[in-house]
Length: 352
Image (cartoon, rainbow, N blue to C red; front, top):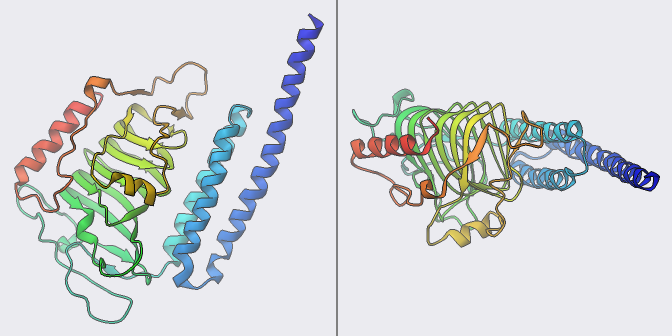
């Protein structure tokens, strides 16, 4: 009996030692990343996108170490480390938005004039009638474009009954080098957003306040962060996935780390079912392993018990959606068909 107790005590002490060492190393690296972020304001504006990408990769490594160590960490330490990683990502996004060079243009391309820093404002005549509308002022869609013509931050917000395709934003295909886009998507209602393209690599996607909307995306190089969404279906692949304060969502997901949800309910997860000829190249460009998918290893921060969380479940096999609409369409002409397809998918894919 005493031998058994001694063994249990030794295991407990070993776990405590590991957790203490991990926490020390975690705080050292977190502090180093934060220091590098604070120094971004001293760097040249043209170098900010590349520096931010490097910092995001360091955060990604830190999160992977945290995931790998979670079996040894107390629940409180797990939660604190993830919260601090989230704070790093949000701080990095803020600094990137403040410091990266910007100019504006939108949607369908019109020939630009001027020097290397282009400023474009073009009319969106894609879908603007009784069936599908764009509700931004004067039907214009804002984009932020960096001085590096191969990097853009695209902001999509305050639209309803709208179809949007990533190919509508590709204005620099003649430029050499990899094309990278970050997307900030907010306050969409009854929209279909098609971000699938072999011509661009998506760096990150940040989503907030969407309702009754479908997003289809190729593999993403870093993270996808979701807040305050309701009744949406997303087809997405990424290294890190986090969703907060959302409900009635269905996520077709490929991720190499454990998905995290918090303050969410009625969530469905399914494997990533995007099927396009260039998918292998897209995974490679995103540095994402197509054979490693942890879509169903969800960590619910509101449910730290051993039993399964009641806030999420996986999609039944016979309900998995494999044929996604409009993947190869930039300008659907039949607005009524688009809205019907949107409502049909939402009706069949969400928990009622």
